[in-house]
Length: 198
Image (cartoon, rainbow, N blue to C red; front, side, top):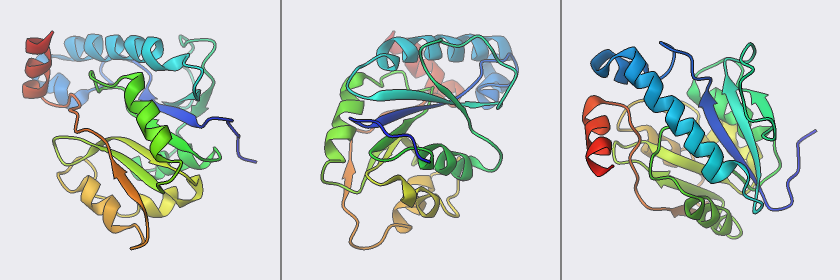
């Protein structure tokens, strides 16, 4: 049975902040500890900014599925399970009745305003995306969560084609809304640009 939320569900799709297991691509250039410290800080900010907003129900979809206990007590947790990124996101979104919005944990400019815009868009749109500068996306939302599996099918993750692949999976009649373009932090250049702004 799918969990229902009166005003929609926000899924924080995150990894438990374990040293050497988060932001590994970034860690290859700035060091595992610096990458871990950045990600841990992003999670703390995410909880504060989004976790307790009463306009939506917040859930953390976490990897690994078990064994990490240091987590905000008032934010329900669900396992991501096995599979590629698309399979895990589809499982997380499919566990909730729509509208459902999913975001990652490495978007410094993400604010409650963006989530509210996505929830509002889903009153009329079928799908909402927050496009990323690298060709992926930092937010995805569905009015009806049962479409998640098809939306993410055969997408080329961690490539400039990820968003385009997901859009190509939609039926021609789908109503799509695009939010502002934001950047996630995957590379040393991303990290340095983030530091320059702060």
